Length: 75
Image (cartoon, rainbow, N blue to C red):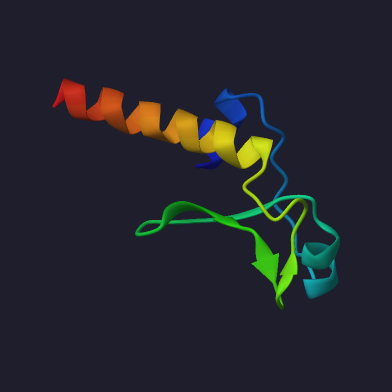
């Protein structure tokens, strides 16, 4: 996902974060093998940002979906 984000010109930083950082965030998402990319819209019953998936999450999700479609069509 990091390579895909960089291809989409989305800034990537790998660093430790504290719970307080998530509470101040305007957008949070998780990535993983099974979940792929999932927006986190609430934390401790409080909204993160607008409480909806943010622009970066939507852009990265669309890029990932396109990547998967192109990979499947080649195989």
